[in-house]
Every structure is written in C-alpha cells, then in structure tokens.
Amino acid sequence: MMKFYFVYILFCSDGTFYTGMTNGLERRLAQHKSGHRKDSYTYSRRPVILKWHLQCTNPSEAIKI
Image (cartoon, rainbow, N blue to C red; front, side, top):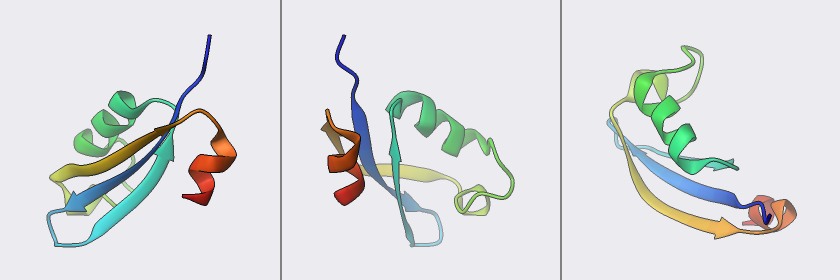
C-alpha cells in the first residue's frame, strides 16, 4: 500500500497563513479546527480554512515543497 504525504496551507482568522505537512490530511485539519494543542500556532487563530494542499508520495519531496 502506498503512503501519501500532504503539504498544506491554512488561512487563519487573523489574516496569516500556516504551512504544514502530514500523512493524514483530514485528521490534521480536524485537529487544527478543534484546537487540539493549545500551544500551536493556529490555536488562537481559529477558525482556519484550508486554502491549498498537495499530495506527495515521498516525504522528502513534501518537505522540500
């Protein structure tokens, strides 16, 4: 089974952008939206909107992007 990695950009409520990488895009978006970690960049900047994402098969490729 092929594993996928995602690079994504969120638009935050304060007008800033957040860029991240994950191997589970839906799960990670749910974490950002629910405020999973109080010390995260997006916690106090919710709600967040997914503006862009790219699926990769190589984690090194995703990190470069």
